[in-house]
Image (cartoon, rainbow, N blue to C red; front, top):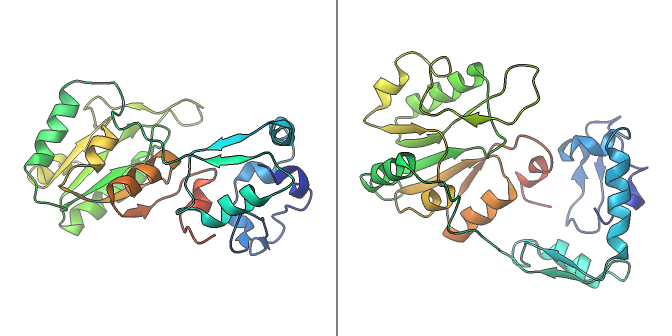
Length: 245
C-alpha cells in the first residue's frame, strides 16, 4: 500500500508473464498473482489509492507480522526514510477463537480426540470462502480417494449471481455433496459447517491445513506448527501461496 501511489501507473496485465518489483519483496513478483483491483483503475480503486497516499501522513503504522516471517518486507519498511515508522508487533492471535458455542464445537473436538496424532488434514477456506456444487463434488472425490482421515468445514455459497456472504450449512449438505458421500465417510472423516479454527489447528490429531491463505489462518498455522497446503482464492492470497517474495 505504501508503494501503490508511486507504482500504480506502471502496473499492467498486458503480458500475463510480466513481473514487477516492490522494495518490500525479495524477488520480482509476477503481475498474475497481484490483486485484481490493482489493474482496474475505476470504481473503488481511486478511493484505495487515496487511502494509500494518506499512509505517509501518519505518525506510525502497526503491522500484525514479525521479521522472522517477512524479513525483507519488515527491513525495507523500517529502513525507509519515505514512510512513517513501521512496527511489526505480530503474531497477534485470537487464541480463544470465535465466541460461538454449541454442539458443533463439542462434536468436532470429540471426533478429533478419537483420531491418531497428526492424522487429520483440516480443510477450511475462511468466512468468505465457498464453492459451488461442482467444485465441492471434486473435493469430495479427492478426499474419498485419498484414503485419509479428514475434517472439512463447508460454507453455503450465495445463489449464483448474488453478491452475499456465504452462510453456515447448519448440517444440511443435500445438493452440495455427492450422494452417499457422508455415509461412506462416516468412519473416516467429518464434514461440518463453522469450525473453531484455532482449536482445531492446535489439536494433536491435526497434521495439515488446506487453506485459502487468509492472513489470520497463516499466523494461526505457524503458531501451532501445522503445514499448509495452499488454495488461494482471491485478493492478496494469490501472492502468499508461494511465499518466496
